[in-house]
Image (cartoon, rainbow, N blue to C red; front, side):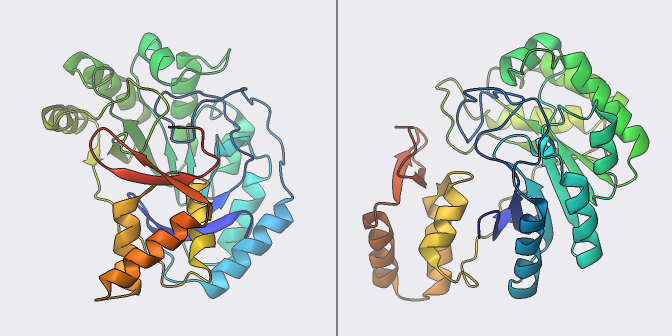
Length: 316
């Protein structure tokens, strides 16, 4: 499939069927932690990048043939709400199935009334909020010109006033940037104005192109949970288990996932162990065959974790 992939394990949404609406990388921001790499050219105008009817046909096929699916999640190789047919897709998907629908977004376009209206039928919307000041917002999210901190916060507040579903704000915690007591208090102060249902605390565990993006220490994570819990319930979910049981073609499934984000080798091996239990040698042969296909390469992070990315990925 061209637009739909998974279901894959999600830290927030269990077995999530992903729907990718954008050409890579189409974004209003150039976040330092982005797993897709740098934004070479900002995209700020909404378009129907691909025919919405083709995307919906793939959703129909996946819902009919794949299980289990806990959520249908609209995402993008960039900023999801740039897709102009998003509201139509959310509406049609809700009419198709009782599986809940989520939209993952950086929230940069929530200042647009049309965007807010298109998201109202979603069961959950997950916008980003990584900084409680204009200075830190510019350092972490690096937005396109005109996408100011005030516009971002104002859009979140306006959406909260209109939206009755679950608003789950995601805070990416980065060592030395937004994990200090002062930075966290600023975030908490701003989010009190938004009143999210929950705050999802996430860490930059996937490879970034920026050398100064590091995981916060445990003390900083605990501090963030304590300070932000004064605003809403803070969730720092464990990663779910990836499954390849329903994969028609394992290599194609892995290629579809790595095209959207790096895949932890430990997670991949666990899924292969589940698929071929008690046969470690066969699992190793399959890993080597996949790597030998020329479609993938590995990245070794400083913490010793190995990730798979497409062979065309420019990160070293």
